[in-house]
Image 1 (spheres, rainbow, N blue to C red):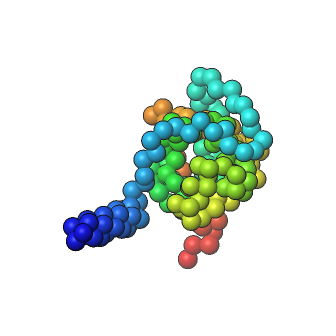
Image 2 (image 1 turned 45 degrees about the vertical axis):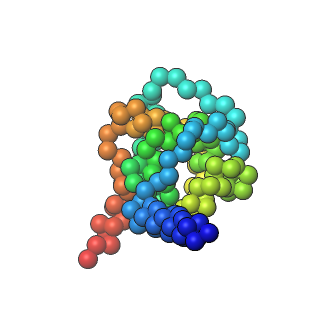
Image 3 (image 1 turned 90 degrees about the vertical axis):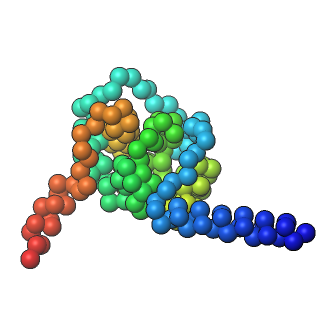
Length: 166
């Protein structure tokens, strides 16, 4: 009986240590499998062909302007790191999350888990389907190891900061 209590106490402490370590060091849990979900939203099918570097370049500009404030490719920030997202999620899910984050966090299981983990809902940036598709292509390019550096800020933001610099 005494051993069982000690074992349970040890296990509870170990779980707490792992949880605190994950938060402090930005370690993300490994998801065992790719989610086959297409998500909830306007996109039910995405035609994926060969990598389109021109479309990815357009996605880089959209990402810099609309996404980079909360997302980084290789590190947890306000939202999850996006490296490998095309390996974990379907193209439809990615686009629906970009286009329809409010409904996704209410109705899609994976999006609900992400909201619970990051404690910050993804804000809608009112992207068009074409813009969302370009961001998806950027993610595909990045996950294929072919993407150049992604800007941390949009060019328009940098110009504002230079004007207001003291």
